[in-house]
Image 1 (cartoon, helix red, strand yellow):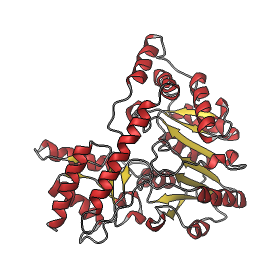
Image 2: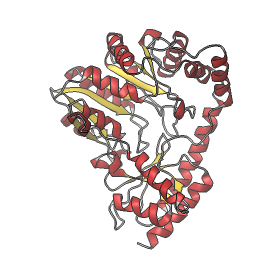
Image 3: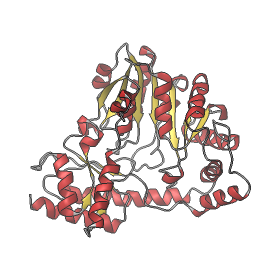
Image 4: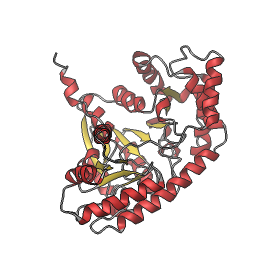
Length: 387
């Protein structure tokens, strides 16, 4: 059987491919430290699990409205209104099974074949994958190490054209941990008004922040009507497997996004939405403790990497990734990632998995214990000496 031609344009996430390869080595008896998967290594707080158990017993096991339960949309609207300091109505919230559907639905709803979509590079690979899938032209926006993996304004101005339909942002950012500043967002807002394009603002890591403050584009004047804000529970509340995300969508786009939801998923699981209410309105102590541990791990990992000759790494402002520069080492980053896996038992990702401007870098997820992270750094140090 031959797939439809469009399937040839659909990419993947190499993190899962590397994870599978690492598991094969483990099955053969090799000790592997996993630094490739981007998910918190903490259990979901019990209060959230308990809310889901109680919801199941109370009968929340059937269909819900396609946009999500009103009670959950109210909780999300309240949360975003408080954290972004802009008034959000529940009717502007669309709940989805995980946050990825918001990426897919936004591109499907707004972008025609031949339109141009600007996306961050290095960046989450699903952006480019779905851009290609819908037949649009992807325009990479380089994120530069010398400015903390932000973009140069000249690069953004050059990327915008009269065919630009959408700009994708991610801050704090995967894979670099970079954080956009208010002046970056102000420049984007000005260009969006001048050239009449939309923005998909991926803010899934907004609560995992160590340096500076999170600012959302939706806060800027007249940007609420052209910004789709993506967020969810996966990273903040260690709920990756629960598949619980949402979009804050301009009112004139909600109907189209909901129609895509009806055609693809019908609705998001009812009892997970009830658990999501508890996550947003319950104690946030878990989040604070998790971020504090990530902060400690970040410092240990970055300091350890910078002590290895030939590796240089900035301290990430947010998320839970380090993105070390390995251009001074004698292997290209793809070969180096394979070398660390096979020769050192450290499973991480080549920067090229995140775009052409990731060449010369590695991505390390420090969502692992401090003990394992320190062991991984020592293994990498010894492996570099053998090159």
